[in-house]
Amino acid sequence: SQTIHQWPATLVQPVGSPLSLECTVEGTSNPNLYWYRQAAGRGLQLLFYSVGIGQISSEVPQNLSASRPQDRQFILSSKKLLLSDSGFYLCAWFQGPLWAFFGQGTRLTVV
Amino acid sequence: KQEVTQIPAALSVPEGENLVLNCSFTDSAIYNLQWFRQDPGKGLTSLLLIQSSQREQTSGRLNASLDKSSGRSTLYIAASQPGDSATYLCAVTTQGGSEKLVFGKGTKLTVNP
Image 1 (cartoon, chains in turn blue, green):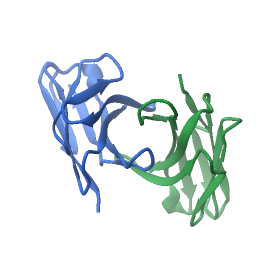
Image 2 (image 1 turned 90 degrees about the vertical axis):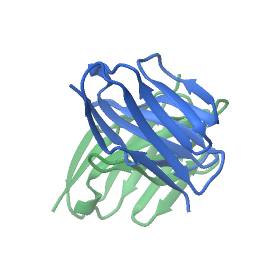
Image 3 (image 1 turned 180 degrees about the vertical axis):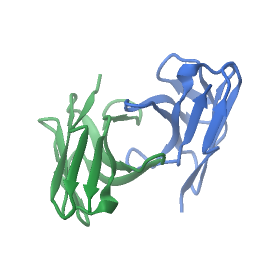
């Protein structure tokens, strides 16, 4: 069966520090992968999506970047975190254009 | 640009009540619509998916309807239980582009015992 793993679950980082969040998918090949951010009082905002290794599309200009070094691995990064980067980050995988599966999320607090 | 709106933002009901959550979207050219459940501090769990050619989907006590022409969907929960307390999110996939879900801000449901 297909599963999606996301870690860490929680993270507290100082302003200006680097960030690396990892997402991996099992049980499928060549998945479309997505990073969403959910800020307090706001809906889920699509940050990046990837349709294959090395293929990254950015939805909004920001302080973050994404990479896909392997077929089932999707990484969200930042060189220097800002206070505004705080939020709940979710990785998602879509089974075709239909069902969407989400990881359990990472709560990032930048202090 | 597709926009999804959910009303109400929060809802509190007594246990056993039937309830309806509303979702509207501005661009009717959708591929599908999904309803998700999110528990506090957790990821999203997909509840129901309605393809653009369908009118409704049912799963247990949940029934979702879709009126694509008017840009509306409803999620009906029958005989609500305290365990149904969560935030319910509606999302659409718009045709013509890559597979991207556009979400509403959700309805926070509290079912009181």
